[in-house]
Amino acid sequence: KTMSMRFFKVTFAALPKANGIASIQRQTRSQSYIAMGLCTRSQYKIRPNSLAQISPHRLHVIRRWKTSGSKEEKVAGQRIAQETIEEAAAESTEVMTTREKIHTGFSLTFWVGLLGFGGVCFLYTVRELWPSQMSTNSVFDHALNQIRKDPRVLNMIGDNIVGYGVDHGGKREGRRNFIMNRESKDADGVKRNTIKFNIEGPYSKGVVFAEVSENMNMKNGEWVYLIVQDKRTGAVVTLVDNRGALNAAVGKTPEERAAMAKLLKGTTNY
Image 1 (cartoon, rainbow, N blue to C red):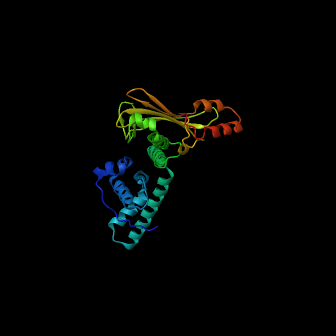
Image 2 (tube, rainbow, N blue to C red):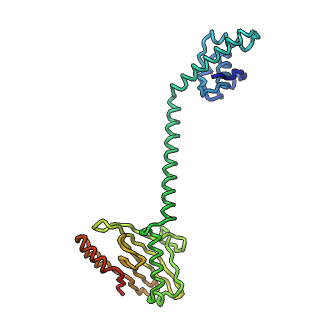
């Protein structure tokens, strides 16, 4: 590869700060000037200490190339400088210092960790924006819609019912707070999601307790249970409660569980 060998003069006092090479301090003034100049103009990524040991013959030829006007000496100096840089570049690519190894390992670990964190955030965002049937937001929406249609709840809480959660400490309530939930599995390995949230209307405030199983259809009013309690009076309205029937069906044959599921469809247990 061809390259410009134009030499930039660097003061000897500035050498310890340039590119962080301490080994050049041990060289003579002429060797240090030439090593720094070759590193500055090279297209290779070379550690300057790889050029620190320049043979006296090469040093003499390169110095003559810098100062002499002879065409032959210029050609010889350029050739020697080219060879010096290529040899130093080969050495630099083959050997890494302990500091460089630590830096490379740290950089790789950092970027892998950053990509992993970004992937987790992306998956969480997708899950929240496109919730599944068993997600907390989906269970909350279906439960609130069914509560708003129940005449007993409307008589106790009032019309235009709004639902909201609490903060993680359970001290503040608000529409922007999270809905408390707990995901679990029954004895047959069927997933369940239990939630708790608050409702408010013109007459009173209430607490809603709801649980759904993955083999139920909330759109058809199928729940493990859906219960509303008035905060002011303590009165309880049970919209759906199939806990007893579901517990009785646990551990039975698939045919028995399928028959029990048919019996539970549309059950309201008023």
